[in-house]
Length: 310
Image 1 (cartoon, rainbow, N blue to C red):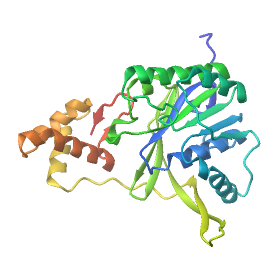
Image 2: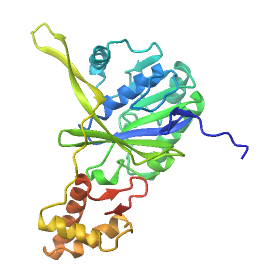
Image 3: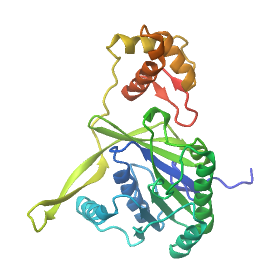
Image 4: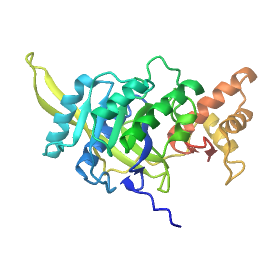
């Protein structure tokens, strides 16, 4: 009872001290939503209704760094204000598994703030994300950076080909995090959701949109433009029951035991048993159907435990 309650950098999502991640598929808008997050934390502004505590924010941009200036200009124009003075960006290479580079970065930046590494893959060149050893070194580098700076270290990461399985790579990464946000795109609709928050609230889904911002014309009279992540007041797409026979059979198989959740392999086996395709194709087709049902929103996947419920 004497232990102090958790101190929040972003209330209910990320603590003041710890490690976290933004993750999503390519094209989901995770870099735009992360940049918006970073600027709002630096200024202490509410982020999608969540209170923030201002601090220095250092954005280590390792992908698309050439477009950073345009993205910042677009954000300033869309919000009719300048970015806060304690938002900083680094565009040179950085290897989180190289402890010398980790220490050099820690010495160069303000402490007790937020450091965002975009992307984790670019910050671990030559490492195998599926290897427990290599991922262990990545996590060790993030922990060392967090320890030396005394703040919050966030990584921007990808999902794998099977987006229903959450973050790409070894399972030790999500287990090591204090908070995580998944960014999704379904058709033209985008949303982010808290998939892990220690002592916070996870599972909520928040819609956002990428708003086009025209800035100027270049020397060839071509438009210079970018996008800005903004709140989307329109409701998320209402999920519908699948119409295809195979999808319906798969969903019914998952609902055979209401109120229970299944592991990924158990769910695949349940769906495969409902199919009438050739035996050697059942497993592949079951995985495809299960992924589609999750994308439709009629089947839920817990990104931390990887358990499936319908």
